[in-house]
Image (tube, rainbow, N blue to C red; front, side, top):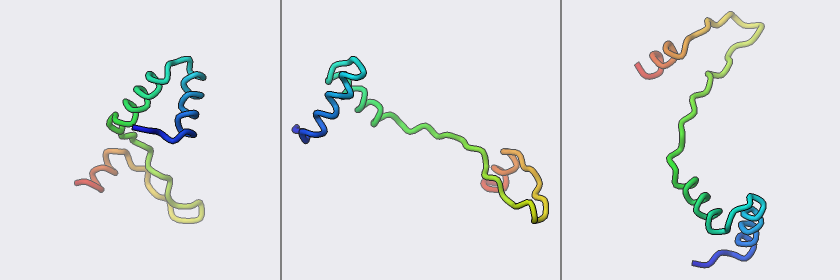
Length: 69
């Protein structure tokens, strides 16, 4: 396998900056890329406006129930 020269040089710089070998840099990068993505639960967006009617505050459970039953 061959890498483009600019990509390899960038990897060498990053590895040196981190104080690790190029091999360890690639192993970490591959592991990070292959790791399952973690789902991050975010707060629901704020809706409505100051001028409109008040919107009741809903709990996460109420939102989940409304969306997923």
